[in-house]
Length: 77
Image (cartoon, rainbow, N blue to C red; front, side, top):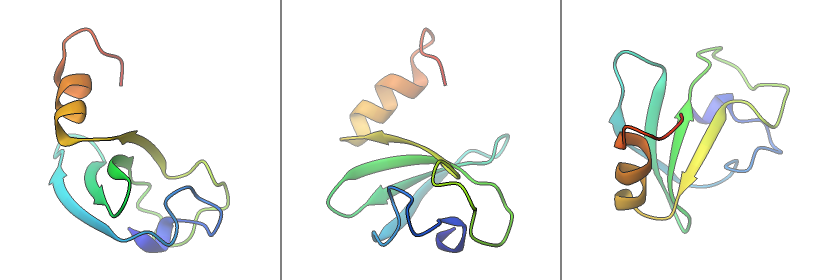
């Protein structure tokens, strides 16, 4: 995962720990040191992306915020 992050990505250089994987999507939830949690849509390119917007990431302050926003039936991904 780290190799997909270009140097100017918001999560580049941060310690990441995978805590959950969505098997029917390319989404992985990471605990991010000093930031909270990030739901990252992996590109599986195997190399650094050229755009700082890729891979796409949604940030959450707590695991409860992630649970509320992602599992709530009215939320948009």
